[in-house]
Image (cartoon, rainbow, N blue to C red):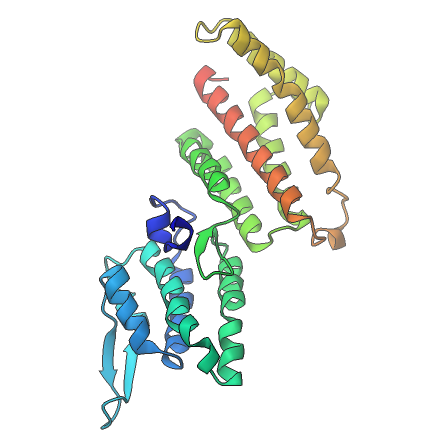
Length: 296
């Protein structure tokens, strides 16, 4: 079943700025090395060999045959090891212990039960775009659709003229991954989009993102669309509805922009948080595409 696949087999992966960070690799591998030693390292190694084609290096620590250290960090720190290999390892460690859960001592059982929370804490603190689900599977946060929107937006922002916007957007992504379902990422993303719309419109009378700015900006886009032969009448009519979507998104964000520092860590229901961020990134990507297409 596809939902049981490890990360690299579930996704057709490729590399982006937000997928891989040296500090994350260093931290997660140290955690996994310590974790593997106290459970079933031989089983972890067996699954690594069969699933990844990687053999964990072993070091004999004493005279006894079973007195062996499994060098997880050293094995997964060599050149050629991809971030997806490390993410797969997280699942393999989980899978190597799960069948033996009932055999664990109370201390080890508690440590295993904390595994998912520990991994997710590291993912959040290092601002990675992944989450470890309750079944031990690593997936993109919050879902693949969101990730694809992020990817396509990053691709557009990679143009030299958007270098400042790219830096700001990556900071926003870090906030999203560190503080999911909180008000602060909504604050930061609103600022990010506000800065871009103000620069795109380039009129000094506007200083904030509001309905007046939206109307002015979309009217300029409408002029470009009306002279674009690739737009039919239905396309032009459909584009008119962007105005309402954009305006309603701004109003949603305003519900979380209180201006009080103590409120930035207030919780937002996950389904609403994901909707606001997904809508915002879609709007941002659309504006980037239009700006690039029409040189606005």
